[in-house]
Structures are given as structure tokens and as C-alpha cells.
Image (tube, rainbow, N blue to C red; front, top):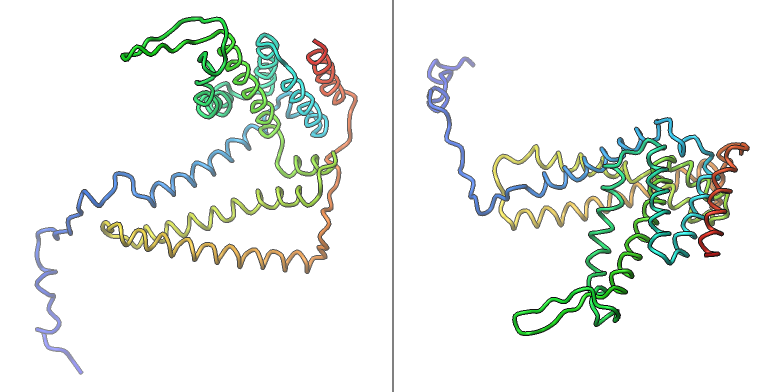
Length: 304
């Protein structure tokens, strides 16, 4: 049945030349950075940081060339030395050694400072502020601060020394762990931990957590991108909270289904609950120098 010319004509709203009027978005309900955009950026930062670590692993540095067992054992001895150091000068020398290792391993100072010094000051520095006062650590007064009501706050020398000691010890321990993780692949590090006597169940949990964490992050990224592609205008707080609740429940259900499928696939391939691994490689004579040097430093620190 043929249609008349009137029926084939374009509608009036399509013949208009002026642009369409889009619905206005309330500024009070539309956040400056949307929660979907914020979550998506956080996922991208995690993936980019993993790519940055891959670049560090490919560099021809000192720690990258060391055998993993030698590296982990030497770092453990260095942690013991940091725990036993009591003087600020000794801790400064140990931290200088860490900075030297970071330099010869071709790890940038910005990378090291952003992941060691900044977290130490943010998470440990403000906790140690009360230790500077004479009420917590009494002793020789360096200077005093008088408040408007006549309250006197005294900063003591033992308090400053104790706070600096804890900060240097925290930064040194964090820097040691960072150097090991930044110069060793995660699967190699877990196999090294198993070789050194760490329980296989714990090693398997760490290995699989890291392996499937990025898979679930990619799934979450696709989940968020699907939500963003279906949004035309802003949404109110009620709809946002409803979607977040439904998304959490749906994503949790999806993760549980993936976990069951992964377990079934592992059992089909002969998994019996025992963590099996192969040694990372053969030890060379040069690999024994690093733990031997750390052992000498450890004995020197504890002996002093």
C-alpha cells in the first residue's frame, strides 16, 4: 500500500533550522567531578602506575640484575638493621644507602620521594607531633610557644630526636620494600618468597590476588563506561545512590561467579591445594655479595 505525499513528508520539528534546546542541568546537583569520572580516573591511574613499574623492571640497574633470592634476603637483613638502629646518624647513613641503591638501580628521585617520603610525612608525621612536646617526652627544652590563654607548649630535644628517629626508620623500611617490589616482577617475587620458606597458601593468595586484580579492574572500567555512555544529562543524588548500590551488588555477584569458574578451571587442570613452583634461577657468586654486605651492616648496627 503506497503512502500519500503528506505521510512521506518530514515532521515539522525536523524541518526547523534552529538548534534544539537541550535540557538544563542543575548546577547544585551536577558535581564538579562526577563520581563515574572520578572512579574511572582512579582506575586509569592504577593501570598507568603498573605500566610505569614495568618500565622500571626493564631498566638495566643494579637491583634488576640481582638474583631475586639474594635481593630479598639482603633487603630483609637491611630491615633488621633499620629496626636495630638507635642513633639518628646511623639511620641517616642507612637511608643514604637506600638512596644510593635507588640511584644505581635507575629509579628516579621523584618516583622514590613520591612513594616513600610523602607517605611517611602524611601518615607518620602528624601522628608524631604530640611526641615533640614536653607532656609526652620530657627533657631539655628547645623553645616554647605561648598561647592566647597563657598556655605554654614546650618542644623538647628528646621529643624531636624520638620523632626524627621514628620518621627515618619508617621511611627506610618503606624504601627497602619499595626497592624490592619496583625491581622484581610479582610472580618472581612470590616464587622467591616460597623458596625462602613462606607458607605456600599465603604465597598462592598473594599471587592470584595480584593476577586477577587487574582483570576485575578492567571489568569495572567497562561497567563504568557502559553507564557513562547511557547518560545524556545529569542525574540526581537519589538515582546516583540507587545505581551505586545496584552496581556494587551486581559487580560482587559477577566477581563471585568468576571466582567459582576460576576454581573449577584450576581443579580441572589438576590443582590439589598445593602451591607448586620452580626456583627463579641459579645463584651466582656476584649475587652473594649483596646479602653478605647487608649482613655486615646489620652486625655493625646491632653491635654499636
